[in-house]
Amino acid sequence: MDQRTQSQTLILMKAWIKTQTVDRYLQALRQQMLAELPNNISLLEIGCGTGDFLFRCAGKLSHGLGVDADIRLIQHALPDDLPHYDSSPAHRRCI
View 1 (cartoon, rainbow, N blue to C red):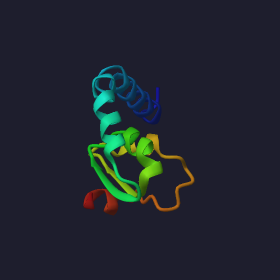
View 2: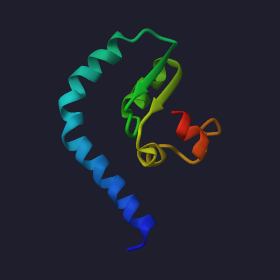
View 3: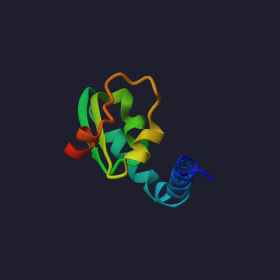
View 4: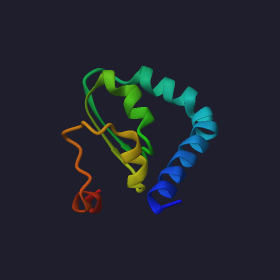
């Protein structure tokens, strides 16, 4: 298995573990937070992982920004056609 395939497999494993553990326990809290969010706000999520919460809030947001220490999780979550996403090394260092 080459390094890229290993990295992709690791990301999928992390995402699966997260959905089977953390997400189950946080689901009720996230639902409550989503219900309390006013419309047309800006939201910063620190430790966003694959951005699940931001994607769920998208209908209420004017702007959203997710920050995570593992750039691979963010890249896994994003479609290739987002023109505003900057994955350059300089941008990652700033975040």
